[in-house]
Image: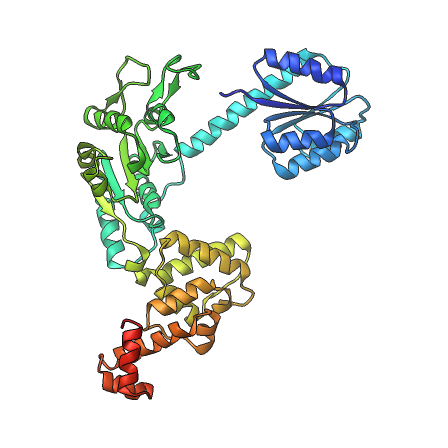
Length: 457
């Protein structure tokens, strides 16, 4: 565990000095403040795990400081100190979220007992979080919303993979298409469901840490390796490890990953012992992985080992028939979250959503529905709460979309774009017969020809 940070807020110089001397010897990182105002600044800057807080301070009092700390975070441990405390003050501090209180004068034996209890609590919290990460909610195929042919085909193939002995799966697709959700489903529907599901985003860790996170390290393997650490492959033994953004891993880690896939064994960083585990690897990327292979930024042999079972998730614009289902699902979800009772979308709003390009895919749709549910005050979500940019792009990109004049004005579409949209619609209605389109638009054929050339239609 890294050094715990301790903040001492007390106006007595001797107490601050004593805390610093004692806690430094115990391996803590110590910050000192002589007033509540200074203490709050240090708290916001360093977010210490443990705070020793005196009640009587110059300026704002300890109780007020405790209230402000709790308004910022409730995940740290505040020990309330008072020389003048009554039982009422102590009770008030505990109600505000103090972990414990002590009265002055105290001994550092008492402080050590308190710190030992806090450290055990922190370690227990970390273990609980690790278990939650390893045993998430079991996801089923019902969690993947969609009735389009593309989705049905993907889920059928994913079901076969889940129940197979496949050791590697590669998920491809744009950001926001649901690769992480499908990985959870494949694990949740597999015989491995009772074992850990471990996730690591390969793009978030520096090269120097990624190998250690995946494979672990021995004590003394590098400067900060104070003790032996299990890697995520060991933690995931019997279950699944999801390597998100696999295209970001460095060449040396690619080699070690390839060796693990081929031999089912690995060595910790700095280790000499071969460790064998049974893990299914699900890797995902939004990169063009074949292009990365051609550019030699991703190993060809690793790519072929990962892609034994490959699924490409389509962007939302290629499964537009699923947009209403997804919208309804997110409306129900955010109704529950925000205690709203939105019944659905108006037809005009639904049509805008169906015709929008969705560069951010399902994730973008989810975020927009969340925004609209929060803002909507009527029973149905209308055009008013749709982002103008979304309305504008949806109307311009598809001339088949049927919108009222109000909808077009709401979208703040420039007049030339509206003219282009109307001309394009007239041409399509007349199967690009310019004479008939000109007649429909009540303009001459020469004028239409000029407009067609102007708008590159």
